Image: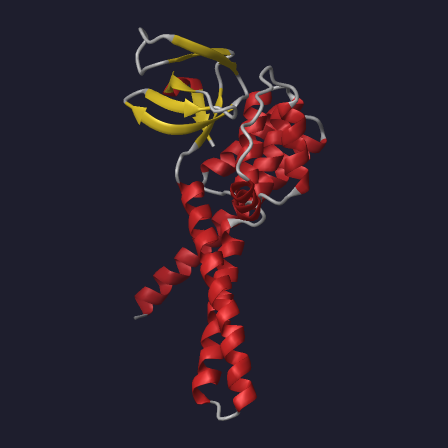
Length: 251
């Protein structure tokens, strides 16, 4: 028993020491950034990420550092990663917009049907954790209202709990669907940033495929399929074709 307690204590100490090391690296990276030593800041931020740390603030800072040394595609990649974690952050959206204004391609998006656009706007209002928390809280409230309806002998209270419960049924299901869809989009590699200066998109997953169109570094693409080293991608205007895996980095 004493041996187990000692082992647990040592593991906790190791965990605290590891967390302290990561915080120290982040502080050093922030200091380097404030002193305009952007390359050292990048090295330190990436070391923290390499240790398994992930946060919108970390990706945002790394994107800013890459932007400062004019590596725009990499800046866009990390802004997109930050946005994926914290979609409603205005600073992330603003800096991403500035970075996108610096790339060659200005692709017009195909407009969504109004209800699809409304759903997407709602989906990206909150992060996956926020949607999940709302779903859990609303379900807990729903259970409380159900208990009130089943146990109360007061007519108006049972009636109020019934109709309020119906509202929370809809709200709980909606937030669950949003959390689930957000989680799926977060965990699957659906999007990527182009990292080749000029990239010719093919009609098939082969070098002999017909040249369809050209895109440039920094452009965001949607991954729809892949065969071996080839990925089928779709760009914002709806054009579809095939590119090699080496030409993109996944968000």
